[in-house]
Length: 390
Image (cartoon, rainbow, N blue to C red; front, side, top):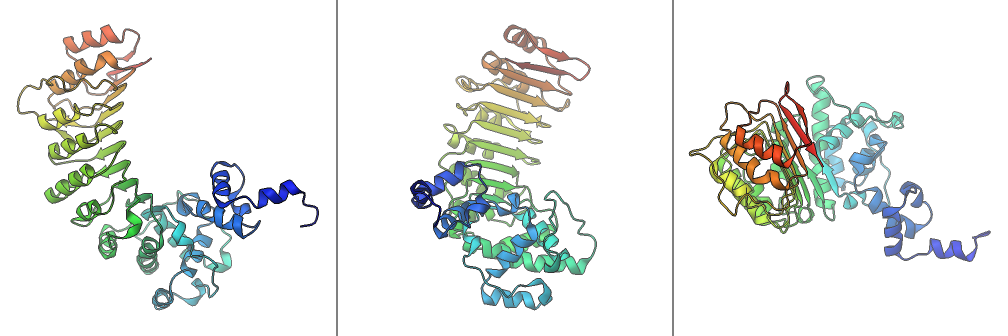
């Protein structure tokens, strides 16, 4: 190139691994890097397409590009349900779906809806990504969205070289989600690399059991607790089979979850954060929590305890030497408070942060333990809040 010095040429011709590392940490526009040359494009495109549904500025162009990558039989299936104005006849140099690492079901759905509402002549119109659609209107259009969705999601599963994040949260039609998941082959290679699993929706029976056979790399779980007994068992087994989970958030359980909590102990050396929201804690479950020897942050929120006997954590359980943050929020007044008192007396000596708020009654012994360990604290008696941060 004219006007290019030797340093510029060396920069442009850097090895692939070096370019990838630079692009990963650089503040420069990755989008611009793909136009420098083919080597830069090959290094930059996997980064650009890693999280297309969460980072995109143009959902219409995104969906249009992915549909262009579909195999011919899938494109033909779409033409049976969509007008030709929605589908491009152009081709692309790469199968961009192979670089997708994060798959959020609901954002994919919203992106397709936005694309259908704005055919290609208006494709420069940008979509606000927090847009929520009212799926109760325009059933014909919604059915079209589901047709595209049911083709595009399996295509991404089949094409991806390895998903890192799978977010099954999906509000627009639980029954349709179930049908879609049942069609996807859970033994798919793309699921072996998952580290983050979000599951706030109803899932097909045996989903966790099938996933257990595929993945061993889960690091973070954000789950609504399954209600079916077999799913509880499968989820417990899925957790036991992982090499090192660091974070678990468990929401909305109406069932006894002692078995599930006991499975957390298999991750005791790696689990550092546990958030239990709106669940029922039994004796065995509470004892199981005490086995989490590396736990640094425990949050129990909108939960209740239901004990068969007065709870007294056995030693050496509930020592939790690394626990530094304990949040007890909106604990139900009609629950058995002996468990919470016992937990506090065991954990307060090592805490750097304690938050107790709403509907919580502290007995004298627990109050003395708190006063001795945390003399400098903020207290709002009207809201029953005690906060301490060192």
